[in-house]
Length: 107
Length: 276
Image (cartoon, rainbow over all chains, first blue to last red; front, top):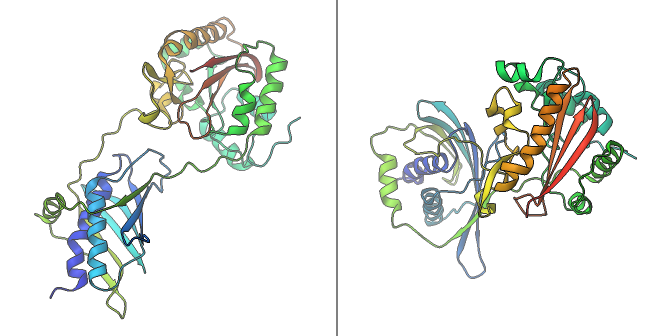
């Protein structure tokens, strides 16, 4: 049985790709925060905020891939008994198509 | 009249600065920072200077840095008061200065432009597996996971080589985005691109608004032509323009644009163009 982190890795990669794809070319730093909550009827809702630490104010919206990857991440953690309440991914363009990132989880 | 709050520029100081040759964008930004001004208050640019306007136009030299500030986001209180003047085309500099002062006094600190927040629900995994496979294919990723005593992921970091296709950079969409465009609208510059040695500098965010085509092609042109003619005929004057788009709350398209001509730091003319 793979560990949570082993299962999580491809999803993290998909999330990073989804974040990058959701933002315009001139954004070299990106913050994405996702907050998860369960509605009273039992359905799950995820609020996504995409922001530019560089101060860009372009209107952006999450691409379907990012939404689905976050849903996947949420399900994965829930299945492991520890659903997160909030995740924050901070990305920096490292050049040549590479993006360094750090993600922090809250429960 | 004007007891400027910490986030509002003092009009006299602002105009005095604009009336001096050589103030640059970076200098004015620094001034705003020092004074605690909201530097998104106005678009302004130097049209003429003590050198010949036309020579500068021809040689396309040094005035790109003179394209100064940007605009304020919607403020209902200011817009409501400004709305009383919509029918005016006021050429009395004293009245215009007083009016401008009134507007400035009413400006509140800019509300944060809300981040785009997207609520999602439901499950849409139909195409995701394909995307997931694509994300994984052909790349080696070395991600570092920090885990707590319960096996929960605390953080993850690393470098990912992306295949993501991003939207190309282009001239900025007018404030508020495409949803606020109305039929026949142009992307209209507040500060005229032709006044800058580098026309791209006029593409600064918030210098572009959704504007009626007729305004962009005709009415505003007449204002710009008049200002340019004045600058041409009076090379000893510092001619600047101030521009203020007026927004209603929660609207991304201005209902009017106010354009001011400033000569040696004094407002000498103003024009309000209704955009609806």
